[in-house]
Length: 153
Image (cartoon, rainbow, N blue to C red; front, side):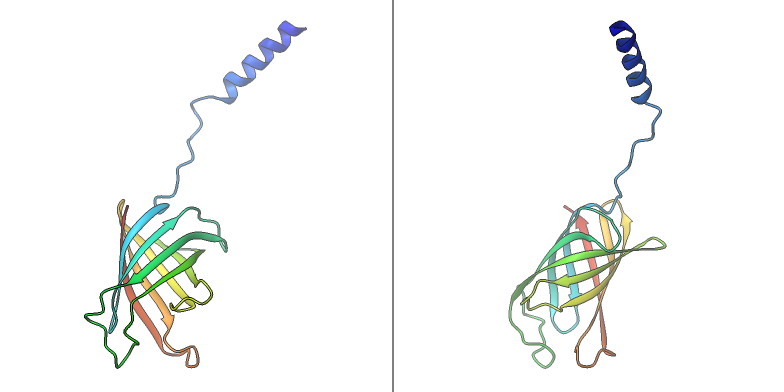
C-alpha cells in the first residue's frame, strides 16, 4: 500500500508541476517610478511612486512628492512654499491602454485632497499621463489638469 501511495503521489506531482502551464505575468505598470508633474504657475513637483498591485477599488500604490524649486512659482496663484506630500493611489480600472487611479492625500497634507490620475505606458520604462483635480473645493467646476511623466527606477 505504501508503494502504491508513493507512485500515486509521484505521478500526481509530475503532472501538476508540468511546464506546459502558462506563467502568470506581472502587469508591466507594477514597480517603482520617479519623475515629475509640471503644474502651471507652481513648477515641477518631484514624484516617486510605487505601484504594487492592481485590484479595483483597493490601494495600488504609494506616492511621495515634493516641491523644492520655487523659481517658477507665481505668488498670484499659489502660496510659494516648498512642501512634501504623501498619498495613496487607488486603482479604478482601465480605459483602453490607460490605467485609472484616484489619489488620496494623507490627512493634513498640503497637497490636494483628491485627484484623478490617468496614465499609460509609453514603453517598458516610461509612464505618462495626467493629474486632474479641483482647484477650489468650494467651486468644483474649476478643474486643473497637469502632465505627469515617470520613468522606471
